[in-house]
Length: 153
Image (cartoon, rainbow, N blue to C red; front, top):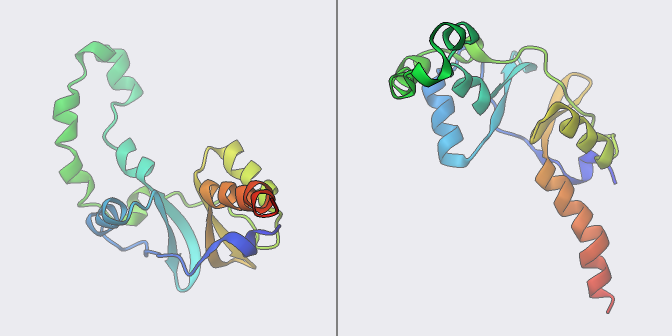
């Protein structure tokens, strides 16, 4: 079974200039864990929830200097307002790992698991053609192995 058979086509995208307030609103309202970033129709990055939240975490220097017990986590939550005033280009990952629509779904899943991704962009010749999630792969495996066997009873 190939990625193109189970991927979600026409995924929601953002541009490098999109404000993070819009992005985090989409993430929270529609439960997107990440969005491809397109510029002039080409994928130039990926912005994920972890990119946004990472800006709130204490730095290694903070933890070494102050110790983890003295880090003001409540105060750090207030930095969220500063983070959402940034642009996608300020936090996105530029070197995006993608899979091909012609890859086997288990090859794509192994790429996701190896890189600790829950979803991955599907690219064909540099063009974004869809998104694939681990849930998509799991559902396809279930339907082709378990559900298909149950309907034959």
